[in-house]
Image: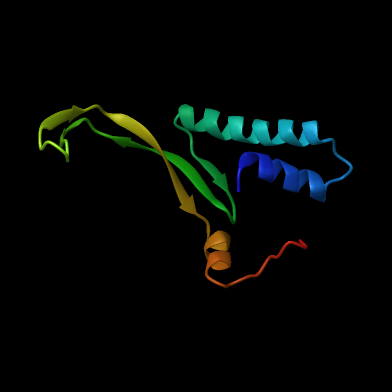
Length: 100
């Protein structure tokens, strides 16, 4: 599902809201999650999962094509851990269809 498909689905389920308002809400949620992660904070959405940041140290890597060693800088990467409710849903625990 793309962001625009998500926005359209939410708008379809909430006909009392304007599409532009749904788009602003989705953008705000994503901006808040991104901003929190950029500050190093963890974002937990109960039943869905938690977003956090993992740090990777600088290291010496290898170019797989040439075998040449390359310096890989330290970096921070986003990490997502699924919540119990999402894991159960993915593995047949609870079926929440389109009607909810």
